[in-house]
Image (tube, rainbow, N blue to C red; front, top):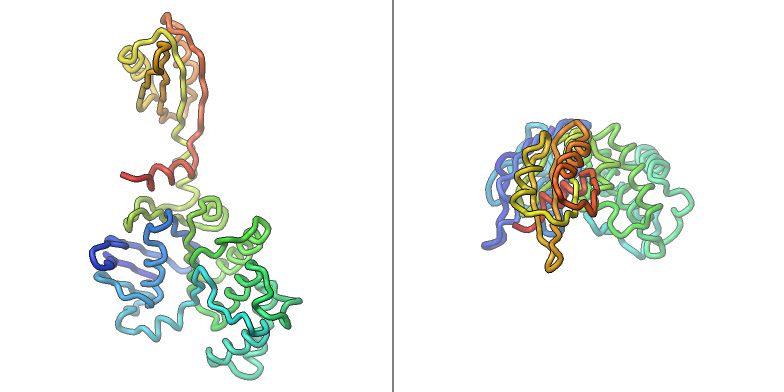
Length: 312
């Protein structure tokens, strides 16, 4: 459906997107995640043809975006982060205006508006002005706008930004329903939203892809790695690293001495399907170390995101 090869975008000397490669099949909901400034919006704007890439290529249904921009844009519905709505217009008048722009006429136009009102939950607000709506309702009107021409691809930039928890759930349900029929690409920096909505997650940092996998696979890989924190007294750092690092299932041992009281804070990274806590306790018990703290943390998608997008 969509093929992206070596996509790169510079703003003067700043590289906003750095040689991105993606293949997005038909019928997939893909989440583009990353911190603010990672290059998400720039990537989406190049996919829509709004920005020209510095280098690289984008093909949608075997059409090159730079060679057949009008045809490609006819396949795409786009909702930017701030929905471009006219606050003084009634919701009905606005949707009618968009339908006319999209070339819909007579019964087809009225039928499409009625379908979008039902799908986006706009009943009861059709004769209100857009300016008096809540942000959640404005996002729904923006979704109806993006879907007016029944596009095959829907691109949403931060669709839940600034919404309250109830509005987020409502927009999420609408997106999942749309995803049963269309290819959906959405950007966000909220991991829980991507996890709840998307079939696939792509994490981007400083313009580069640092992770790309099915949501279920990322969740599975996150669960395979655990972290155990110990606080030990009467323990030498080198001895701790040697003894605990030799245990099966321990991938890494780091120590940090607390100032003045002879304690060592120890972090163990465990990559094993087995519970290694018993062997850690036995190793500590065989010494004269005093165990003051023993806490296990299961690594989750949020921790993976932080690790992949932290500075340096």
